[in-house]
Image: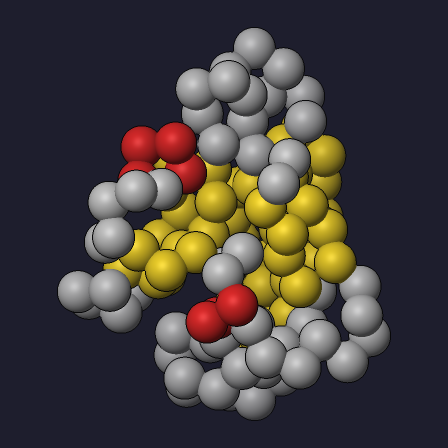
Amino acid sequence: MGNIVATLCRSCGFKNEFRLGGGRFSYLTNCPVPAINKETLEFENINYFDHKDSGKYLFYSDNDLKGDNYNDKKFSNFDLYFNEEGNYCPSCKAKKLAFRITMYLD
């Protein structure tokens, strides 16, 4: 089951939405995840299966993009774990980006 996740930076107010995880019929080949492109430093929503070994992206499931998750709440998509709080913000570069699941998709 996939999700729509909204983001909000607690420092600069940056906002966006991304899709996390595939649907009922595509989860074996399509796993959208949030990532930072290492070349452009931009936030992207990419297919994990296509890029997991490319070295081109840092994924928000990686510890490099995680800061203090002060409420200790996490969510997952199979073996990928995401913090609700303390994620890297591509706008201000602080680890103050919050993730909230806003919708479940099938």
